[in-house]
Length: 74
Image (tube, rainbow, N blue to C red; front, top):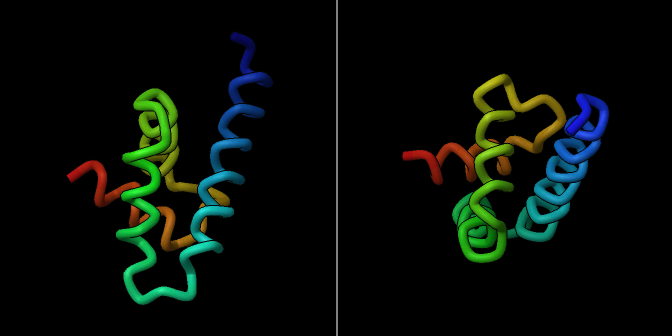
């Protein structure tokens, strides 16, 4: 897979994670709900790519999405 295509895929994952974060942003346990959604509905490969992105700084991700991804790691 080319670098540009990988970047497009990562951008799509970031966009989807941010959409999920917006949907749960009104709830006090939003990060936990985001993590639950990612665990239940995302393929492990998708979660792994997002985790690697968070480890590299998480550019473009909502804070609650970053928190959710970190909670999945630990």
